[in-house]
Length: 350
Image (cartoon, rainbow, N blue to C red; front, side):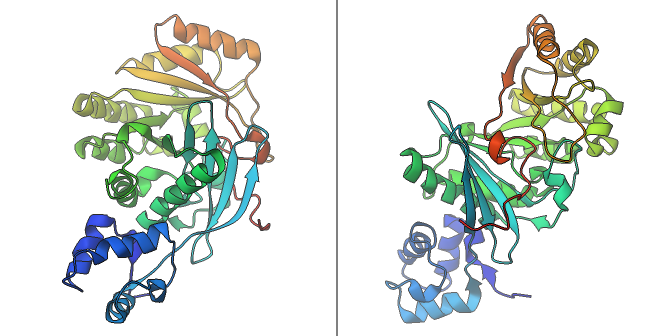
């Protein structure tokens, strides 16, 4: 096992403190940070403006982790999916989603996912490990650079909705978010970051206690315990009553509006009775409901809701004076849409 520390797990302020122990020259931290992130070196010997003694000290204490993009695929709607490979050869995906006025990055927090939601291809990969804070940050940093190169725009928004359950990797996700927001880094506003969870109760409460300024989205998909347990096995551990209490706790502490994600599955959760249960569940705090059209995966038994059922479902919610939108997922033709990320192109190189 590597006894050295991954230097890319350090944010700028942590790097400053580490460098203070190695050199009295305070400006060296900025130089090292630029080499790591803006020049993307993978060896301390490449840091040519550092004294040789400092390079050796860094090499003795740290190693440089890095992500490689081994495949990219573009959708007809201009969405681009990237397959990242870590230094230990694990693979995960990130997505750039362009729209008229913004570029959104959908990022991963784990290699696959342990929750095994029945509609989601990611869970069928078999969970491997958490991503480190450095890997999460580097994924975002690289996607931001790619956004500038491809679309001539920096990232507008970040959605933590890719592979994995972010609240099961809380500390690393939190550290990466803090790094993103650092003024010495991407200086990203928390108001442009959304974290989506399947409903990890302790994690939701911890977000409230830590007063994270980012947006919270709940993958709900049913407000009926029996149906939700079928769709999302995590509901057997955190049922709707415990989830409701956690959401209420979150709202009381933060006063932030919750977004609910609700995947419409034909014949399963798209009836008017389902809509009624959804509106009853969500009335506990101000919210927005995002209905999502189902994206079929090759081994799934589910089907999309009919046009009529979808329209009736929306009308019912609107009549309750709730904010509801129907989200048409982008990147479906390249398996980059909600529930489709599954490293399906991992045997191909760019």
